[in-house]
Length: 183
Image (cartoon, rainbow, N blue to C red; front, side):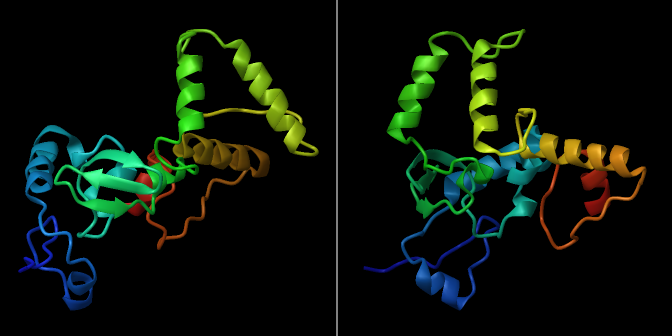
């Protein structure tokens, strides 16, 4: 059986060792089509900066259609181990049955209310029980929000304006203080 050369999303052949270690990935046709379409419709090609093409190697999968455990499948049917695990938020794996079932049960009661949910109090108490010395909890929807909150808190507490960032780190936040510094 002849295997086509491993070709990245940009149409270039992978350098020797990569092509030789991933011979089962032989096509990215649909991914390439969606990549072109996404860049025409969405600034940067993704709604989340951390998911943009410039944040990943050229041979990373383009568009994911499903996941199970630590594995994901792209629109071309290629299977990958997803090192990133949902931008580090999927620690138990994709489609983990106990989590899916618990989330389903909770969603039957409604989601994203305009006012706080009683469940938030229960979750706050349980988290505080796990962290000695912690007095309060502030939940947030993503890493950018909590990182930006930490920067604001540090600035307020110290009276300083400067923020130190690691220029080699690919991502800290989608907020201006980071994006402006990394552009």
